[in-house]
Image (cartoon, rainbow, N blue to C red; front, side, top):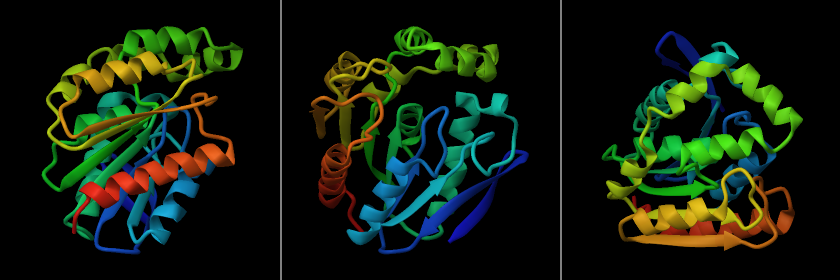
Length: 234
């Protein structure tokens, strides 16, 4: 069902599907939204596995209010914290899973007590190298970068993802493609080495930044469900 909730001055829009006592919040990446094929597939499979899910559009994305340039990390953190508040009305046991920048934001919000486990899918760990890779990956992304505005990149560098990972006390699954040219597998390895136990790293073969192929979708979904089955208790 469609839900709305406030985050600062903006009203955000999401899809809440109730299927069990535990609830998983799914976060999209920078230039994406909650309707991304990969994320909707994940949600359906989580529901089939007995988990409730919440997918929502961050500020300035999809159906949520706000300008595109409003979508900076500081605002994304506020958005996810408000999504967690909504989720807590429906569950006392919450899992976070995010793709790309959505994974990085999930890590920044993961110390909320109701959050029991976290999954990073192609998650940003080293912002400067990610920015360089993004700008070097093609004309379309260079155009998108102009649309983001300077404030986005300045704000990104103000957040310490490495400290968030080192201080994380929740079980962390890290998944990355071996052909990801935006968030390289080197970042995933560095994240894994910095994280506390329990932790797990899985590198998907022949996979880029997005998990477009069905076999990749299934592989990532199975890894995620296994992780939540192990650590996301009622």
